[in-house]
Amino acid sequence: MSERAATAIPPDPSVRWLRDQRLGRFRAAIARRGIESSFVDTAGEALAFVMEWLPADVVVGLGGSTTLREMGLWEALDARGMTVINQQLPGLTREARHELRRRNVTTEYYVMSANALVESGAVVVMNHSGNAVAALAFGAKNVLIVASVHKLVRTVEDAMDRVFAEVAPVNARRSGEFEPPCRADGICREPACEWPDRLCNKLLVLYGEAIPGRIRLLIVDESLGF
Image (tube, rainbow, N blue to C red; front, top):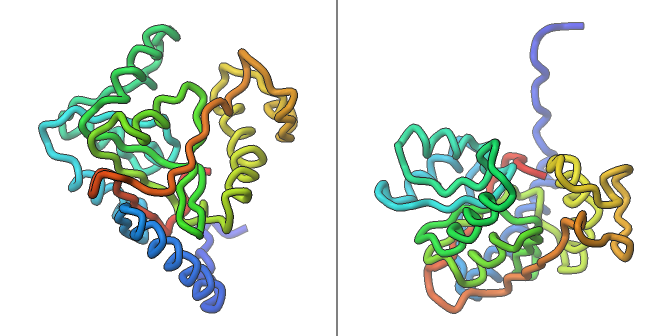
């Protein structure tokens, strides 16, 4: 077997055309609801966008997002010497992590991801503790959502299916802390999913924003997160 790295196969032009049509409808719909969106091709461009969006002297709140980790945002913020409220630090007690999440909610600048983008013009976020939902809904003064284009779905119902069937089992495996039914085999059994191991506790369907410019959405063509 050759040691040469496999070359990525570019998408069929017709497949990309259909994706771009759907993405265009989503961006137009969300713009009519007070949420500006931008589009970049790569994780590197996404990271540069976020770092330019953030003033150098602010406290930054971060959602516990695989997308942000894969972009290298945590390292970039540390290299710039910025103050970050980081509830993901190793060794924290559950109580300390919860307190940091509370502080995160009301930061001036908050960066997060989303579980799904809905073609008709909505963003769907599911949370365990609710800190990202609270920051997005009202708490943070400025919010930037970074989401890969592969999270684009047709309807809110499709978004919910994505959350329960695809996102929740991966989050359950990733957490190492909770044991919902889907952690064993990847199959959602929502009626049987109960406290204290339930992860899918708080859902926000963002249809629009009342304050102009408060929420920005950055869509990335590269696959990030899950």
